[in-house]
Each structure stands twice: as structure tokens, then as C-alpha cells.
Length: 595
Image (cartoon, helix red, strand yellow):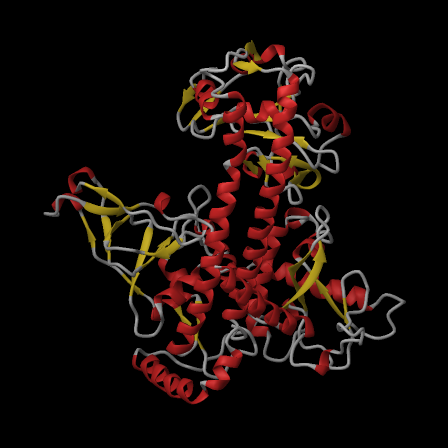
């Protein structure tokens, strides 16, 4: 996977390692009174691994299903970018849009599941899916992808570390969910149910507490997206909180359109067209730092603050009883429902005294501080887990452990290679390289790695190479230097779809890193809002001379804690990378002590 893959590891195709279940059945033919059923919707997305198994009567299931056993890997092949993968807690039946993989003598099932959930693998399958409306990953494409295969005992060691980190992430996510319940509970305590109105507040239609009438948002075709003005879309927020304020999509629009469809801090947007379960979703806009617009499936409200404060209004609009009232007004069509301005304007809400609202808002501010701390903690843990995963599947995470178990691993590697030969796997094989005139110059032996990249990934890698060349060509640079970059910083230098689309770029960088075409490092960065220092993912190009200085993307020289210049040849790999491994180990020790 990485150019420096350990000698006891092998790259083996998934089709050889994983045993796909082929036993499809018609559930109505089963004699059992009930069966466990799993659909795509029952597997958590984002690689979180949770699986819900529903007890269902066989005769109520009409289509073919696949049998699976407890401990099998379940992987969603439809829309694989959703990253639906997990380990089945019990036996049952699953949709044919889900692959079930049984135990294999070559690979630990949990090791394989962690690999399938990794950002590298998600980025890899993005180029292999077929179909525009319902993209799927076909069997041949999946089976041809290679997985790094350490000896089984090292696989188990990696699983133990990643499971511990995953458990810490789960506990932090649960804590974040609890904090998200604070504001609704406080609203209920201050004002009661806004529909039943047990505290007998004055009731007024929404029309009387907002300025003017609601304003529908902006529609633009897909080709207008990529750069320009930020736009809030329905997927950017949940629970009234803008989740991606620093990574909104952008589109090219005129100044008049910005003026007409702009949204400001303190205003509220409400989803007016969606599936019924998402209709009425709302957001109190905050923390915007530049002109921003909102999409056409939302309408914008601006409260009259002498009547209702925006923090009170958003909490009121998000109360489940008021949301139900709004959805009851919806006009339903196939797969979606809608509300109009009249539906919103005639919605009755309680209007307590402003002094009472102000007391509530003060409490909300304190709860928001708690929520932000919990969110930041979860964000850091996700970064830790992603970094651990990258290190795990490149062999770095268990480097010290591998050294102390060298004899055992060497013996296991011999047994594994013998098993691979039995199934006809060639241990060492060459790939056809890309024609020399089609790719930039790379390190010897690296040309073959470019053959597995899709067009977007290859274009990004070429851009990075040219970016580094340009940096080194600046007059102030008398010698070549090592420059490192992040998905966000390199995105600002791109044009088209990838411009500022750092989430997509991060996935592509994971694919490049998996092939050793870029080297992952880690650096400390200060957040804009809280000022705290956190670690973020960064990368550099490999195969650079040993006497080069390490330089950050803003041109500053990287130094040690004692202010000594860091020279690439002074350590094995990057100094920052070694520090990151040490930090991750320390982080796990602290979390272990807390839990």
C-alpha cells in the first residue's frame, strides 16, 4: 500500500481474502416464525459500524435476501460513498444490495471491516461505482481492489488499537448527543409545549412576529457550482446548527443575486420542500464571515426582535409538536412534500415576555458552550481515528510491536504466503505502467502506482507536483525545500469542482497517500473560534533529498521544540509524523485513564 510497506505484509485482492456469501433465499419459504432482517437503512453510514437487525415474519418479505451469520461483514454496495459497513451481531437475512462476507483464513473480519471503512477505501471505490442515479459497486471492481495483509497476529493487534479508539469515539458521540438535548429540555422548562401552551402565553401567528414575508432561496444549475459565493444547502445543517460553516459549497452568481438571496447572522431559514420526515427543518444562521446565500428549497425569516428573539424562535420552530403542526399543513407528492409561505405565516406560536425570552437565551448561550466543547472533542477524536487508520494500513501503527514479535510474524508470513500460493495468487507481480509521456516524473518504481488513480486523482496529484515546483521556483528560494499542504490549502489553488471542496480532496489525498505518492504528516494548527491548538492532517511529496529543510505552506521553517531546524535526513520519515505517532499513543493513554 505504501512504498515502505513492511516486508512481512502483502497486497492481496479482496476477492481472494473475503468469502462472499452466495446463499440467497426467498424468506417466505422459511419455516421460522421470525427472521432478523437488515436493509441498507439499518447500517449506519460514515463507517460507524452500527447495524440494526429487525425481527420480521418471513411471509411479509417479498424479495430475495442473502443469509448471513453472526460475525459476518455486511457492506452496502449501493451508494458506497455512504460508507455503510459493519459486523453482524447475529445471524439473519439482508438485502441483495448488501454483500455479506464470511470468515476467511487469511484476514481477520474486523481488520477487513476497518479497512473497508477507511478513507482510503472510500476514495478508491468512488472511481469504480457505476450508475448516475443509483451508483453501485460491481463484484469485479470490488474484488480487484487490494488490501494490505499483515500476518494474522499483527492484524489482531491493529484491530485492538482501532477498536479502543472507536469505543472512545462512540462515548464522545453519545456525550455530544446528550448535550444536543439540553436546549429542547430548557425550552420545555421555560415555556412548556408551544402547541398545548400549558403556561397560557399569548398566541400569535408567525406573520405578526417576523419582518415582511418569507423569502424563497436561489436555484442554480449544477454547472454554476464550484467557486464564488458560499451557499447554505439543506445538508449543511441539523438540529438548528450549521455543521459545515467553513466548507460550504460555492457558486458563481451576480452581485444583484447576492443582494436578493443573501442571508445574515440572526436570520432563520426553514426547509420548505423535502421528504416529509425532513420538512420544516430549520436553522438560525450564525458565524458567517462573508456574504452567503441559501438554496431554493428553503425560505428565509427575519424575526421582529421586539416581539420574539431569534434564539427563542428557532427553539420554538424546532419543538417536535410545532414541527408536527407544520408538517400537517404539507402538500404531499411522490417522494416529497412541501409547505408554502401561507402555511408558515399562519403557524401559531406562543409569545412570552421578551424578558423571559432573554433569560432563556442566556441559558442557551451556556448550553451552546457545552455543546461546542463536546463537538470539538468529537472532531478531535474523529481526526485521531482517521490518523490512526492511515497509520494502521501503512504499517506504521504497529512498527514497534512488529519489531518485538519479528520471529512469530516471520513464521506466520510464511504460512500465509503458502496459503496464497495454494489459491493461485502470485506474491510478487508487476503492473503495466502509464506511458512516460502521460505522467510527470516520479520516483523509480512509482509509475505503476499511477495506473490505479482515476482522472480526478491523477489531475490532483499532477497539480500538487506543479505547485511544489512553482514554490521551489520562487526567487526567494535558493535551494529546493520540502513543502507540505492540507486539503483545504491545496483546494484554494485549484479551479473547477475541487476548488475549496476539501472533503473530496481529503478522500483523494488518502488514495494518493495509500500509494506513497504523497506522504501524510501532522501539524498543530490554531482554531479561529476558540484559539486552541489541534492536530490536522497534512501531506508532502515523497522522495526528496535528505538535506532539505521542512517548510510549512506559509513559508515558515519547521523547527523542533528546541528551535533547531528539522532536516529531512535527520530522522526516519518526517519529524512531525513521528511526533504524531507519539501524540496518538499519549492520547489513547489519557482516554484509557478517563474511561
